[in-house]
Image (cartoon, rainbow, N blue to C red; front, side, top):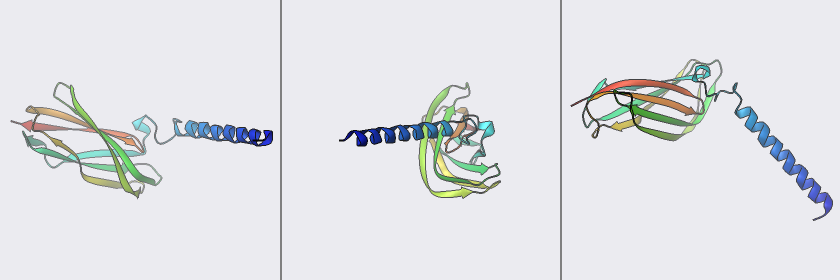
Length: 153
């Protein structure tokens, strides 16, 4: 390799590295919609079940709705959702994270997109009591909500 080609290769690598660093800085900026502060999120999420209480052993099916509360369209091609179940003493029982690929959809401002039967919890091994289920939308934007359900004996 000649000296000129070697220098050109180094210049290309430096430019590529600079572009990667710039992209990282932009994506991790606090003004970017993926901000870790859910209060600044352009979306809210809502979780519903078909009833407030379940018999021991029933499967709880949760429906998740994502609402664009911002002023711009949001296009989503995938979602990362995590749900965590807490007992009545607020002790964490388990947490499950889902990565979901979707046909890209655009959610218009002030409209909602619903995913039915997205989250399921088989209560066979649960004790009777009140449980809190926290649901977090982690990607492409952040939002969080929770719901309480009762498991009867």
